[in-house]
Length: 549
Figure 1 (cartoon, rainbow, N blue to C red):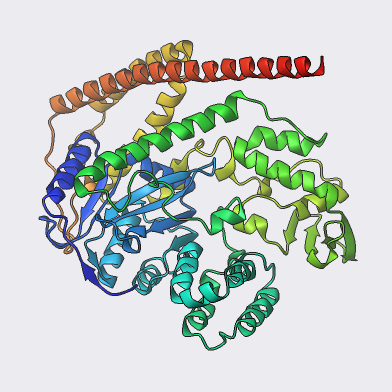
Figure 2: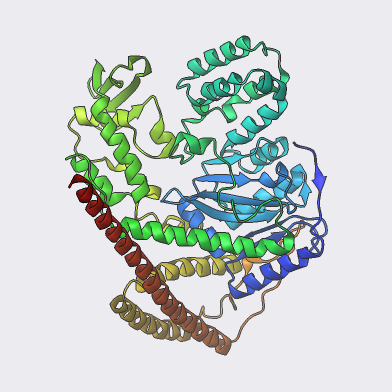
């Protein structure tokens, strides 16, 4: 699955380009790039909206590059970059139409995507097993850990070994257990050899090639790297969860943009619902532990539920001290009756730091039951800060990404203007979200905004640097060609700037009003759902009482 292939978009390509140009004209933070000629006859296309770029600053530690269209025979060569938000939901980092499936095309695509994401490399990236993609990742993201999608390998194994799967139905189950349930490298290697010997496939070329690549797809080799997975099933799930149900093999180029926007809107609503549930409902605590209460206030609901599951399991996983060398104490943690599955935890009392052989925290960012069992034995009552990964907390999107990147502002005046624009826009979006939470806050926010407009106008009239950069520059948002052509940016007069400020102010006010209406509608729906649940609960109780009578 690594041969170079050329595709065309047909007449629908112009529709996509018109959409991208319109979106960029409406918002300079909308990024798109075209490989090769601007008539899109032979080059791939990449785009990322402002929200995708901002989300990457919060959740860009692990990325999924989904090229499902290649194996599922999609009519449109649609690929996506996605990740996981603080609720463990899919979040979009950009999309592409890959017309030229060659190593140079994938290199260009990764370069364009990375440029849109301010050149911040992720910790890890998951892709389909493909030689061309692998070479492109090695060239553009040399420090990023590459992982092959396990479900793609399972699917291809079934195709390559179809006769074995038919003649020996148990092979599929045993193969899955060998990959998913082994907990150490030694255990995996032993199970692999036994599996191949049992079914007489020691010399099978496909299995040999997969074993050679084991460090890039077998879970036991990947546990020391963050991938953000919250369950075993997610590690073997399909890659295209963000667009699943929206883009499929029958989707045409004419339908693509509409389906893309539907997917974006749907996941945005799901995130809002998860935010609401986290902020306005209280989870049921299952232990008297102060740590559980602390975690309930820190993490989003889904992440807390995962933490709670690990905490409760400490009751069945006692920690036994096996070595004490002063500041570092080593424990053996195993579930009752399962000593053969014991894990080793080293605890440094000075640094309040623990390392477990299961490496769950390193892999998912959520502390494991084994370390929690040691904390329980050492009477550690609250979760040390190093075990609270901000990307999983309620406040994952708070705090200034700006301060962290202040030193990285480019010297080029046109690029720095774009950075300032994007930074201000990110802060404005958070301001709108907070300002729309209630009528009172909305009024206060509008008053503050109007005052800010006056101060900006006054500062602009006083500052000699007012004309430094001319207009809002597209900078890195223009059409990018293979030769790296750039477009000139026309300067705007002071009157045009004033007009632009007024327009943006009116747009922000309109957005505030729409947010308030949307919030009111959402709360009404949620209240109605709670009332329906309450009524149903009463009916169930009445029915039970009737049965008892």
